[in-house]
Image 1: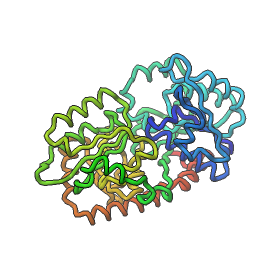
Image 2: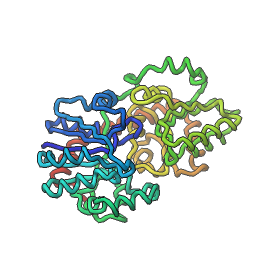
Image 3: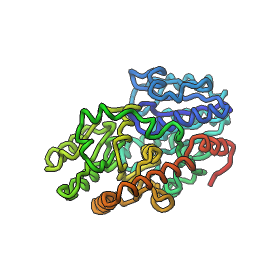
Length: 394
């Protein structure tokens, strides 16, 4: 098949979706399909810089096409992308967009419909009630001024990453649905392949002093619940433990980051927290080598790639139930699932602090085994092919 994947961004600062697009493209290309990745780009981005950040896109069966965003920028549409698709859309057998509210998605949908090309939407948590409340005026504008509403209603299917996410979406949408988790290349992601942590430990020697390091490895955004994690961690009895908190994140909200840093600075236990925001891309994965327990107390997640990466690297995880990953605790015994509330999260931290390192190690091993069994890209791509062919719908 000749497949068009469309992304609102392929910037490493956009979190998980670009990694999903890159992984999807490579997995489909390895199965013999021809894949084009069209994306809106930042001013300084080029195909070369994007491929440097996402080497998976450097495949003979993949063509990467970045397009500049047109004025007004908040509509997230591109005249150059639209012109290119008008002349090329008929070449594709499948159009699969990773995003909803960007204006370019609805325009490509209309072109797909005119050419009778099957059209699919990966939601990435965008139909979650929490997400729908954020910048709601922009979403209303998108539906009223652009063909976004029709795109959502008439897509061949909306692809959700979890059953919980699909159940939330089906409360407000009647569109055909299916579930497909994000994937991971389990063979290339393990602790032995991670960047060396010697330099980081030399810069931050406290990493060598902590008996147990809790790791937050995600975007610095209010929905990730980092302020809640800070409050829970700082409320622990630090006279009775040598635990530390390592935060390695991508800055996305300057005011929020200032608030977090102020909270740390004004705490008597601020020396037990490292807040690092200058590691991106592959370099940031050194955090997975330094951590003992991965923590993500999100208020909303579609499907967290960070959780997959942490489990692939054999870290036990402490996550919120809003991450839609109950199997972590209920089926695999790879960690704990708590509510995104202070007391619940604090109790989760205390529970993992009380466990011997051997038990944490066993949790991590079970997690990696579960990821290898259920989320390797090769099996995910095979299931995606069936969705494209009209199978596995709910």
